[in-house]
Image 1: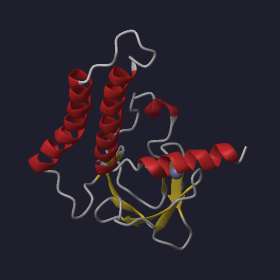
Image 2 (image 1 turned 30 degrees about the horizontal axis):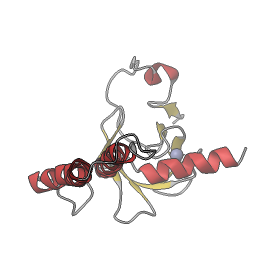
Image 3 (image 1 turned 180 degrees about the horizontal axis):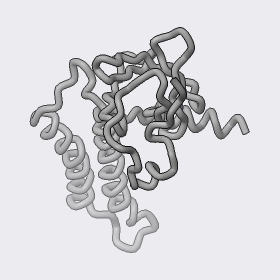
Length: 175
Ligand SMILES: [Zn+2]
């Protein structure tokens, strides 16, 4: 059986999917790496695993379930191959309920409210050099906490931000 390119040709990258239909996960295929989103995964000889030619990550595959797991991550990160692309599966043991949503909103709004309230109750001396600080601090607090929550949401949906950044950092430093 010859190697085929699944999901890695330029047509797919532009969103025009030229593939005839869903393609099962197989060791003869070449797939886009779900970590660096750039490299191609191909089967490691004699192993039930795939390796990325860009970030060098090793993945173990479960062909029956069309799933792929990052070999060295805890908790394990798993993706499902839907025939065209990888879909993140929720991490085992991590539930995403309304409690989390309320906590996320609280993390974003409460510190911002506190800082903003402080600036409102104790306004800076008008015209002083540092009168911009409370307003700036309020905005910075909001942005920082929003970033934390967005980061967690992205991680939850199986886009491993740190691994992605590390893969690209290592690649760029090698040049
Ligand atoms: Zn990769």
